[in-house]
Image 1 (cartoon, helix red, strand yellow):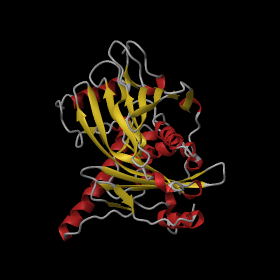
Image 2: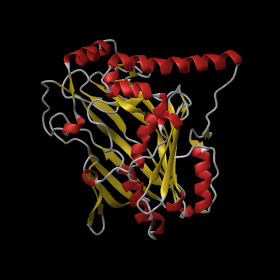
Image 3: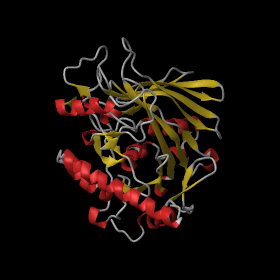
Image 4: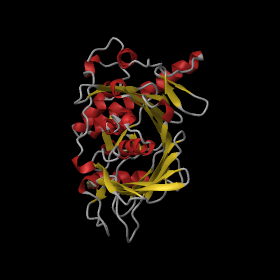
Length: 395
C-alpha cells in the first residue's frame, strides 16, 4: 500500500469522456474493474479537507522509484544554464535560470503514478556525464518524516553551477480531487557570478482531478515565483488549470519584471513548447521544447554496491514486484521497509537518541543546506564533492 498524499499523476477510467481540450494520452491511464473498486472503497472513507499524510493507497498507483529520485527530473536539462555566468546582462542570466526551472515539469511517468514516500534517512545519489566532458553530481536525503521533508543538492563544478533546495509536500482531499501543496524552494547559484547571489524559485501545487467522477488527470496549478533579490529581477508564473467548459491543459503564463517594470512575458505549455516575449521589442523566442529535449541519463552504483538505505536498494523488492505487476508481493515489500523504519524509531526513542541527517543540516529559516564547504577551484571542488557524496564507493 502507498500513501495517497503526494499523488503525482492521474488516470482515466474506462468509458470516461473528457470535454473540451483533451489531455495527452501519456497523461491518462485506464483502471480495470478490480483497481477501480479498490480506489472507490478507500475514497469512501475520506472526508473533505482531510490530511492525507496517513491515508494508504493501492500499490498499482506507484511509480517504481523514490521521491528522492523523482526530484532528479529537475536535473534533466541543467545544460540549459551552462555558461549563463558569461552573459553580461542580468536579464539574460535570469531567463536562462527560468529555462532550467520550466524544463523539469515534462519529465514524468504516464498514467496514474506516484513515487515512493521516502523513509527517514533514505538517500539517493547519482552522477551525470555531459557531452563537453564535464560531470554533475546529485544527492538527496529524507531529512524529516513528520512532516515529510526531502533535501537535495546538485553541483557541476566545471560548469560553475550549484542547485539546492527542499520539498515539503502536504496533501488534502477536496472531494473530486486531491491537492498537494509543494512547500519548500529551489535555489540556483551561478558560481562565477557571486554578485547575483541566489535565484529562489517556488513550486506550483499539484491537483489530481477526477477522483470520484470524470477524467482522472494531473494538473499543475496556482502561481509560483522566481526571484533574484540582488538584480531586482522576478517572475510570477501562473500554472493554469483547465476550466470545465473552456481552456486547455498544461498552459502557463508569466510576467518577468525588473523592479516594478514588466520586461517580458512567458507563455506556452509546460508539457510542450514555452516562449519568452520581450515587452519592449515584441521579439518572441523559444525558451524550451519539451517534445524534442532528450533527458540526461543518470549514472548510479549497481545495487550490490549501494548502501542499505540508498533508495534503489532499499526499495528494490518493491520495484521488482511493481514491474512484475505482483500487487501482493509489492504490498509485502513496502510493509517490510516501513515496519523496519518504525522499529528503528522505537529503538532510538527507547534510549533517548534523536536522529540526525547525514548529509544536510537545517537553518533557522527552514532551509536545509548540505554539510559541505566546496573550494573555489573547480578541480578541488570536484574532488571534494566526489569524496563527500561517494566516499569509498566507486562508479
